[in-house]
Length: 185
Image (cartoon, rainbow, N blue to C red):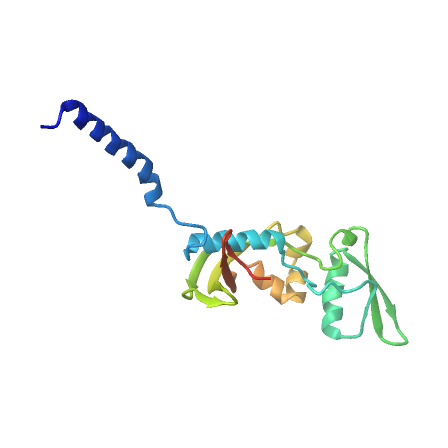
């Protein structure tokens, strides 16, 4: 027959083990293919990679005769980020940053994405030695400066207008690493 003391010890050991195992029951690892982990990886990437009007970082002074580029640069002139001088003989406009524009030139970044939901993702597959997935997501833009919110800027830069809209969406490739899901660079 089992003594009361042995039963009490067994019961306490059982309760103690359950107490320590319950928090682990709902755990998911950072590299698990879950929408929450994808959002974490995307948001970490976007904090370091803002959206910019001129992602190729042109060299200033910038000269152009292209009507589309002139319209875009003139919107930045209206926002007091650039100054313009016109070379009438060669029909070119020459743009240089203003004092205020020098703080955001040459790329003119206008905020970073914050992913709000994952719409879909592919099953992870091994590519280049890492599991990768393709995700579709919705996001909002954070830290959008006042100069980027004008109608003239939105008209001159339709991509910026789309990315700062309330219904912005995009897709990305993510790779699983020991630190979690990341956008491969």
